[in-house]
Amino acid sequence: MNTPVWDDGNWPGLPSLQGDLEAEVCVVGLGGSGLAAIHELLRLGRSVVGIDAGFVAGGAAGRNGGFLLAGLARFYHQSVAEYGRDFARCVYQATLDQIARMKEETPEAIRPVGSLRIAASEEELQDCMAHLEALRADGFEAEPYEGPEGQGLLIPSDGVFNPLERCRTLARQALQAGARLFENTPALSIAGRMVQTPQGRVHCQKVLVAVDGRLEYLLPELKGRVRTARLQMLATAPVAMRFKRPVYRRWGYDYWQQLPDGRIALGGMRDAGGEAEWTTQAEPTEAIQHRLEALLRQLGVQAPVTHRWAASVGYTSSGLPVAEEVRPGVWAVGAYSGTGNVLGALLGREAAWALQGSRMPGAVMVR
Image (tube, rainbow, N blue to C red; front, side, top):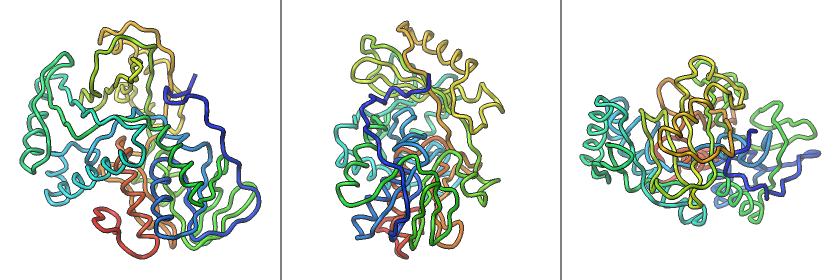
């Protein structure tokens, strides 16, 4: 069992690439970042071919917890301390704008319900208050929270979504707008002018690699900066509604949301797996799934588990994603350290502009 709760089984699939094609840009990776980049490239008048080794959003983009969180992987006060207030503030505002854009693009997939950060200890509660103060100091929405989930803070501008539904909607829209997209088409070699696949080649002017997990294997230049981890989740049968908002708890190591039909999607416990979870294997394990189910029962949810799945996600020690030209003509965005749903879409759009030698208005990371 390794199917995410988001998958309704209705995706008809896309063909694999057979033969040679030409395009101005080849995008490798059809997840949230790659599809955002493809849409931006189409708006800029570029011809685009997009390929994926698996299916649209078959990696982390369609196998995550469905959280729409503003900012970087570090909490806002940590980002201010580590990267400087101006940069942290600009990124946070840009991701808020990106969330608004995502609501306009795929309103049926998104629920703007806010998010909760809940403390699992007194130390974490104090950190939540520092988080709250930093957001408010820079004019961002946040409120102290106490409720059935526990104590912490409420961030009204966040939300949740069905990540697989959004990506598949974007893929259909891109096809209608003239992009040529191919599934089951891994990139065997990548150069600025050509991407080799098992049954064909894409001749192009520029390449964008928009991949999160396993990015350091696709682009070995990034080994040492990027490391792939496994994130695991489960989902239940429907239960009575009890969680109005998604919950981030225990420093983000535990997280869950309740879907509109009552199902609970819950993930985390990566820290409990130790070194074993630093792996490119994207299969759920008995040890972590047992811990996730124990957490589910601690929350008072007794419904049977219906789905168990895992995904590969790229992390950096700095907490900052990769967003740069890594070899001549080849750009990369990825390694979002577990928070790529919003940031990845933003960086995909910024990278589309960088590929043509310009800078997207308001760009904050890709220069």
